[in-house]
Image (cartoon, rainbow over all chains, first blue to last red; front, side):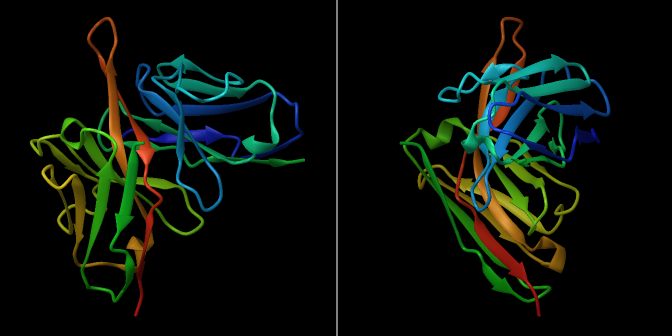
Length: 107
Length: 126
């Protein structure tokens, strides 16, 4: 099974900050990597698919990069509505795996 | 508007059974794979099961294999999860999610989950 890790597990940031979250796969998954945002009590929402493609309707301050084993989600200028938990997910093979999440809260 | 609405959650004793449903609307249900993902209280996301559009391909997480059965009724635009031999560790919010996909220029298929339903809570406790 492919194991997914994320760093950091949590971070505190201010509105306007540039935020970077890293996701690593235990083996190469090419670009089969997706990113989701989840707010408390809500369902996850797709942000990025295929490592770097921005989902329709998602603000352009979100971007994804990487391939192989190392991936990054970047928020260029953090907005109040971006405080949430972010998960990466590999779709390269079953069992489909999610990272443990990165919680972004207000500094 | 694409919508997924789960139902069927509740309180059940260890060893008991429960059947979850997911009603889909706003898209051609029979053209998409569907998935169940769960989230234990205060924990991360865990993929549970996937089913292809025609039910030809079905996959399970090891943690539920042999106890859970995924199925769908394309005529009723509905997805199901039959959960048997439930354990305390199955306590979670269960989400259904549509399987989206696209093919790049080399023919590689990429998949992701979008959208997700609002979830239904399953509590396994005596």
